Image (tube, rainbow, N blue to C red; front, side, top):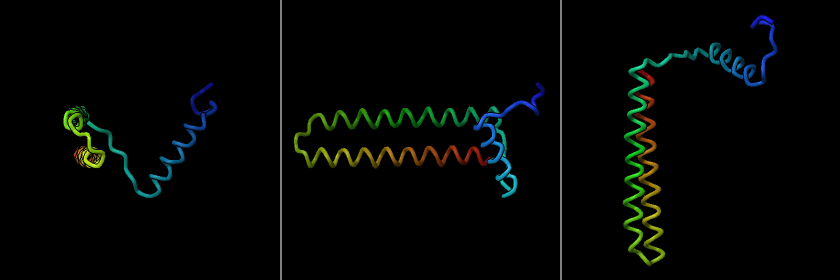
Length: 99
């Protein structure tokens, strides 16, 4: 069977519809260069290390805390730090993708 006459999976059909919808709304798709892919990989690597460091620091601080309210404050601090790092990472990746 030729490629254009073979049956398509539901995934392929959905992707085709999404590409068509993007084309109609003026969204363009730009492929990333190898340098941009390397930059994104480096950004992800750096932020994974920062997230791991924050987790280790959190565990060392919380180990010495017995008060439940103080523990909860430290947990909230970790959540906020993780959210900040993830948002920062995503902004940097989007900046690379935008060119």
